[in-house]
Length: 192
Image: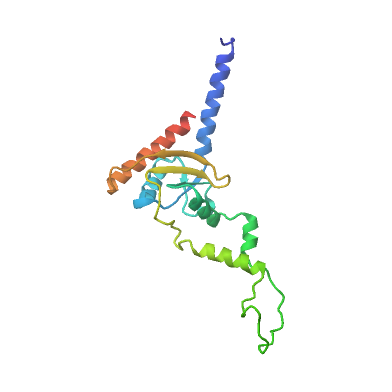
């Protein structure tokens, strides 16, 4: 049983929660990651038309990303786009003082393959970075099939998701699918 005066307080609390949920999404910049069949382009178009979120083309300016997959591949891609400060330092090879050249007449026990631990770490980081596609696309194999995620860049938390499979891959069908995705995002945000 509610005490007198609780109804207005609950109503006020509900209004604040709806407003804060809407503001939390509407005030954000979003980078739409490449998706199957160019669905990312249609989602960006719908987001721009509804003014729900500001779509940015530079991932460095984004607070959130929309993607069609989560997991290790997304984590790797986010680390490439938004490296933590300690990884930025580790990616740069440490400056070494110049050493005099070794005498070429002396045989090397390791067949000329001397590598310090620091050089090995830098080499592994360079190899991992070179495996990504230079155009910013993720590997096609194993992509999500119809699920779209809104992910916070800093916390790496999934803020929202939806399962929506396009009826076909024609531009009209993809546009309708993107429209349903953005409308659902808008509805879910305003009803929280």
